[in-house]
Every structure is written in C-alpha cells, then in structure tokens.
Image 1 (cartoon, rainbow, N blue to C red):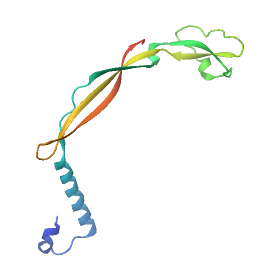
Image 2 (image 1 turned 135 degrees about the vertical axis):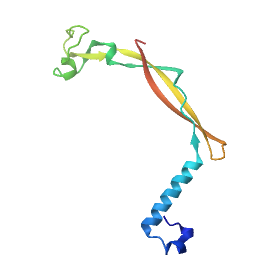
Image 3 (image 1 turned 135 degrees about the horizontal axis):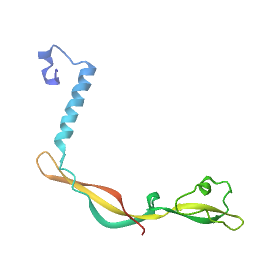
Image 4 (image 1 turned 90 degrees about the horizontal axis):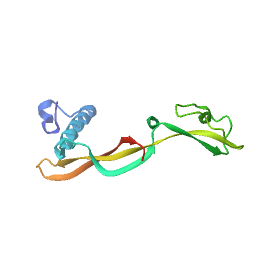
Length: 133
C-alpha cells in the first residue's frame, strides 16, 4: 500500500478509497498503542445484596382488589396450592417468591504505551444466591 510519504515512489496521489483505508489502519494502530488493559479480576461479592422475585423459588397466591376476573395471571395454576377463594371484588393473583441476589464486581487495570497507569475499569453483576430474604 502506498503511504502519503511515498507518493512519488508509488506513482502519484492516493485514491480516496486508498487514503481512507490507510487512515483507518493508522487509527487502529494508534488506538491500540494508547491503552492496554490487563485481564479482568475474578468476581468478588461487594457485600451488597438485593431481594427480588425469582420463579424458581416457588410462588404464592394473593387476593388483589380491582382486577378483571379473566386476568390471565389469575388463571395460571401452580405447584404451590390451589387458587384461593377471594372476597367479592377481588381476584387471585400468583406472585413469585423472593430470592436473594449478591452484587459482585470485577476490575482490570489499564496502562498507556509507555507502561504508565491510566485508569481502572469496573464491571458489575447480580448473581442469584438463595431463595428467601
């Protein structure tokens, strides 16, 4: 490929396509040299937890006011027992029981081309731990 510095040796100016391809390659090389990050650390619990519905923890029925009698959620049966008989004006609704989730983090350290520290990157995830909260 011809470069801007070698125009005469290559026989003239670059076409717009050649110039764009050269610029893209140079940019990719420059960006790669700017920063290099290490591998991600293993996931560790941050100590924070959350409590959220989890279908694998089972479900329970509750009577809720002001729902339509034909609500699809109220008609779904489940292993946790029969649909309760609710007072007039209320419908049975199935809710998933709660599960505990651990918040986890991981990090990696990044350096410039000279090997100087530039920044640390973090990522987070929420991992199911157990049923109940």
